[in-house]
Amino acid sequence: MNYKKSAIIFIIINLIISETYASAHDFVFKSTEESGAYFEINLESDHIIYAHELENDLGLPTEIKITSSSNLQNYRLHWPEASRKNYEGVGEVLYYSGRVVIPLHITANNPNIPVKFKAEINYAICKDQCIPKQQIIEGEALDTNSSNRMSLILLGLLAIAGGFILNFMPCVLPVLSLKIFSFLKHKDANQRASCAFTIAGIMSSFLVLAGLMLMLRSAGNRFGLGVNFQSPEFIIILTLMITVFISSALGRFNISMPFNAGSNLANVTIKNPYLEHYFSGVLATILSTPCNAPFLGSAVAVAFGASDAIILFTFSLIGAGFSLPYILMIIYPGILTKLPKPGKWMEKFKKILVLMLIGTVLWLLYILHNQIGGRATFGLFMLLLLLKFTIENKAKFILLKLIAIIVLIAASMVLPNYASLEDSKQAEKLDKTWKKFDRTELEKHIANGRIIFVDITADWCITCKYNKFMLLNRDNLMKLFKKHNVIAMRGDITSHNQEIYDYLVENRQVGVPFNIIYGPSVPKGISLPVILKYSDIQTTLTLMVD
Image 1: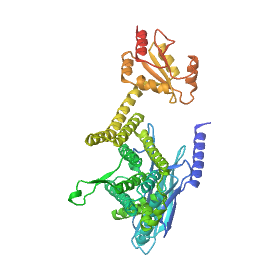
Image 2: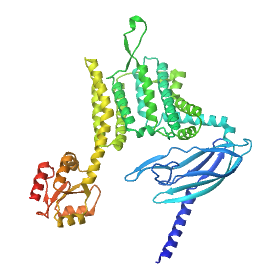
Image 3: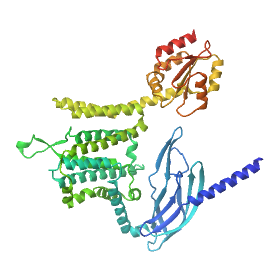
Image 4: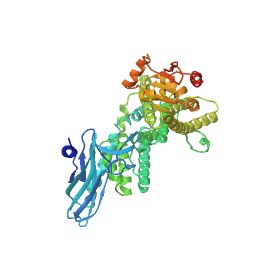
């Protein structure tokens, strides 16, 4: 087939693909009094479009611009928060998937007359390949400001509904269970006051989030409710908080506060459950941020493009919606009397609730593992255990206990990041030292009389991990390799690899790890023990050189 025929077929195939994608992935424009004006696209499973703003120029940004109009003074698009995915060796890609809604805010010259416009949309539909697309959409919409009152009512309803539904999202359930246990534990306390302190914790936290949103927006940065979970420091602080709450739920640590009621009571300290209720409201808010309840994403997206007052208004109503169960308890305190009376069953119930909190910590550590690595995460886990033991220990010297707690918290904030940085530097060294196993290259090096160290490993092999941790990934061995000009090759058989499998069979090996050293005097190689020692490798290399 000649070049011209191939080119024609390629163009026809791409036209067919483009038409297929177009039928399923077109933008549409909708405008109603209830929902306002917005662009919408419904993407099929596994299909994405790139975000409006990209990082590192990775992808084709989705762009919508009004090219011609009548009666239009100004317009603003409210882009939703993009999802993120990191591709190794490429970078972080920002994208949209599923149903994507982009609200359009219009200001008209004459608010009594509809605005007519023509919009040009440029984007790319991607699955296994990306197909660039361009659409021209003609639309008609009313001045957004002319229906501000209705828009505020709708925005408020979305915010309250989204905040209320957050109570039932999986990420908040552990705190709700803690709250139930707290009500049971402090049955004699003023339950209305307890609810009020919880509401105060929730509302103050959402107002802090609104303040952060305003600060970041003024600096030109994007903000979303869940972006704090991209910060390892934030997750570490959260694990520390929940560790303290676990000890508190078990009754092994009590949060206390001073209570002054006259000169004779100035130095009295009493156990106060209300402070615990306040911080449980704060914790619930923090844990709710990665959850995207229905209506909540749309409310925050609209608020982000509006005034500072609208942002505060929206976040206050989200907090009010989130607080709604506790508001109802204050209005109808009889609900609280329906809770069962304390008894022996509480001990079993308490263990279930604590297990849910421990599960939350493990979930956070899993997120952290993907950010800072396994060694740093394991170190943090050990520090959390030490912290739990310290705060539960009934020490006679309170000052020493306080110092120990401060040291452990400081270590938890510093050491994991330090370990992660060291691991990154070590990974760079390993990438330079270890070459990917290649049979052809191996035979070429053997023929040229080079010294080659081969390591055949797998992720599911515990002994392999032991050898790497204790020796193969250590600086002293890399220095030894450099001294003797050793070529290090590593083959991974975590998944089936026929080339490596055949190599193991030829060397009469039935499993991993398998380590062998080739040299000028021993072209067939010298196999090493399963559990490696530095002295074994050093002695073998010395024999090769001699």
